[in-house]
Image (cartoon, rainbow, N blue to C red; front, side, top):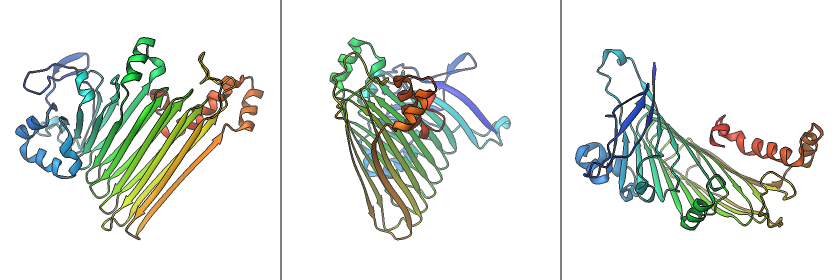
Length: 354
């Protein structure tokens, strides 16, 4: 039996480095006891053994300054004694704004099923997701500057900086990251996937929609160090005008990681600037969009399955013709093809993320 909760994190600085949390469930607000937010030192003080165990699983974990710990609920209550999974939806939009500039680690407790909808207005400098045994986590992240006000656009565009997302999975855990970045320059987006436990899985499905002279660089690293792990990465982009994207992907499989299954793909579509729906009043009139793709593998074990691929091409003219013959104009037909191209790998979540 699966219990569902929708939790909205709201700010409230207690003054000791932690944050007061409340839940919004069935129209009621009450103190939330199963989510901790605080500094790394406070996390170590309150959960010394567990925190030490987590921070030792990978050297990069030492750099995080704040911890969000989603704890498993007690199973002592007779009403939930047969419960094996608690399903929680967390929105971190109101986690006070200063944390957007800090290094945050979100820890998902054992057996939890968590959906994290990241709606913070700023791009994170660094955020990590660490999954305990048998935990499942889905992260939805969207950043579209076109939906901001002109004043906000100017401020945020000037403050855009490199972003790092680290993913860590324990035994039998599964993490899925969906992201959409549109109409914004991203100097460097780094996603590092560290599969630390056997039978764990990480999936990354992302998309960029860029126009004019917007540029983005994305680097994805998939590290497999133990046996029976899998990772699957798909990054797509729709480029218009003189937009540019550079994709760099590396799959690393260590000597002690047999039976690994790892895949990375990068697909890019060049959209003509003549009347498509990505156009705006500031169209620079150029059609020199470019995509640079560098997938690579480093495999130190023979008992594995790995694949990588990349592709760059224009909108299919035959598909465009068919749609226009059914009453759509060029802009509408182009948008349908873009939505189909990008939304395919969002597992039904494209309307939500779009």
